[in-house]
Structures are given as structure tokens and as C-alpha cells.
Length: 248
View 1 (cartoon, rainbow, N blue to C red):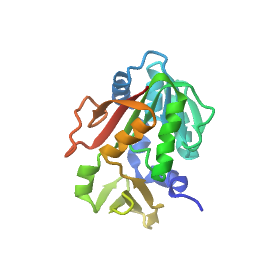
View 2 (cartoon, rainbow, N blue to C red):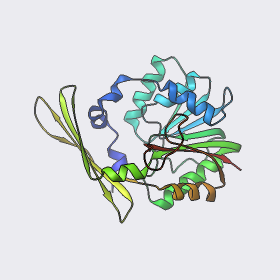
View 3 (tube, rainbow, N blue to C red):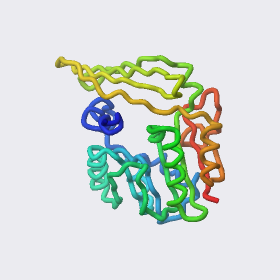
View 4 (cartoon, rainbow, N blue to C red):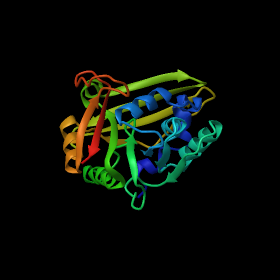
């Protein structure tokens, strides 16, 4: 059986989220990551679920030795194009994040914009444990997830957008029994037609669950931010939960 995350991140995903076509490099985010993880120059960084590479490339431009790992061959192709355009070296790996044996060691690992939570809770915990084993003693992890509380207040919701010759609708519901937010996406080009994408199902983690997962894997929590900036986490309104933790 093919899982949704094996199908979603292809040409259709790129056409649905037209902002991905801008080929931007997330320089401001990279500056925050560098400070929050106390990265020294030429640190070895694993970008877990790197997608089209905007953070991997930004970190590489700052002098770090970056490995970008993602399951989507299509998005990795876009990441390679971006690295070539910016004339920077990044090691790209097409792998499932549950299969990281033999990689490393790394000084830090980042998992950004909810590239985490696709699997069962047990498998997600194993991913964190694997990251712990890949890091040098004192190595850091950054885990960037949706903040569940403001997100739940919106559900269910439909997000409509019209731009670039198409209308898109992202419909999101919450499965309370599984603690997952489930999304369907439909694209309607002005030229006609209706294009549906595979449904996604992502585990929505609450703060106590994330802290327990990190600590049980051997990490010591160092920080919790409300975004990829120096913003204090506010459980009622921060859009993100950005955790930083150190390998003990």
C-alpha cells in the first residue's frame, strides 16, 4: 500500500503551492537557526525533510556542511537546481527519515515546517531516537511544528486562494481519535478541469508530548520559540512550536 507522503510531494504539490516556484533561500530563518543551535562555522547539519532545499541552501551559504534528506525525488530535484543557482554544495539524499542508519555524525539536525509527524507516534519517536544517535555529544536538534491550540480553534476550515491562473482549496479537519489533522487539496485552473491531490494526515503533537519524546530520547530541552525568530512561545496564539534540545 502506497502511503500519502509517498505520493503528495510531486509536480501537483508544486503547482498547488505556487509560492514554491519563487526559488527563495530562507536567509532570515538560517540566521535564527544558527544562533538558536549555537552553530559554529562549518558545522555539520542534517536537514531532515528538506523539501525543495531553501533552508539547506541557506545554511550552506553560511558555511555549514549540510546534508538535505527527503523522500521526494521531485522536490530534491528542485533543491539541486536551487543549490546550483546559488553555487553552493549540499549533499542531497533521497531517503525515508526512518532509515538514517550509517549517516553522520552531525553537529545539529533541523526538521522544519512540520516535516515531522507523518508516521505513527511510535515511529515518530524512533525518528527522534535515531537523530539522537546521529549527533555528536552536545549536538543540537531543532524541531519546528504547528502549535496545536490556535490551529484547533480554526478547524474545520477551507483555505481558498486565487492566483497564477488557478483557484485552490485546502480543506482541513481534525481527527480527534487519532490526534491528526487531515487535509484534502483541489486545484482548479482557469483553463478548466479539477485536479485532486492525495489526502494528507499529520499527527498534531501537543507540548507535553514533544517534551516527553525529546527527553525520553536523551535530549535536554534548551528552548521553545513561537516561530523561527526570537519570539517567546505563547500557547494560545503562536503559530509554531520551535523546540531546541541538546544531546546529553
